[in-house]
Length: 118
Image (tube, rainbow, N blue to C red; front, side, top):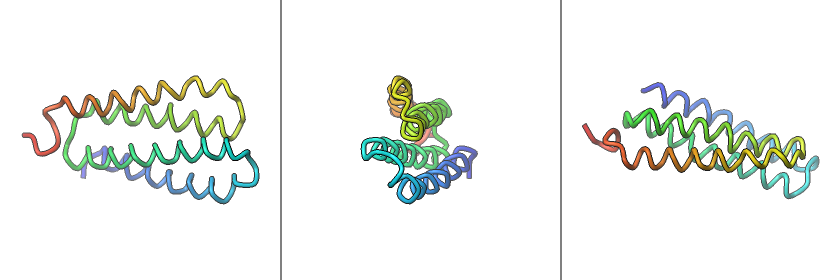
C-alpha cells in the first residue's frame, strides 16, 4: 500500500465524519443553501479521496495526487468554512480548488504512470 493510499484512506475517514456532522449537527443550524454547500464539499472530498486511494494502488503520478489534496483543501475546505461561517468571500477560493481537481485528472490522464503502465 502506497503513501497516497494512506492519505486517501485518512481523507475518507474525515469525509465520513464530516458527512455525519453535516447530516446530524448542521441540519438545524444552517440554511438549506449552506447545508447543500457543505454536502457538495463532502461529496467532492469523497471522490478525490477515492482517487488518491486508486492512485496509490496503481502507483500513479504524484503530481495528480498533490493536485487532488490541494483541491480537497481549497474546494471542500472553502465550502466547509462557507457553510460554517456564512462568509461569502470564501466562495472565491472554491474555483481554485476545482481547477486543482481538473489539473489532477489531466495530469493523470496524460501520465505514463498508473493504470497498468510500467
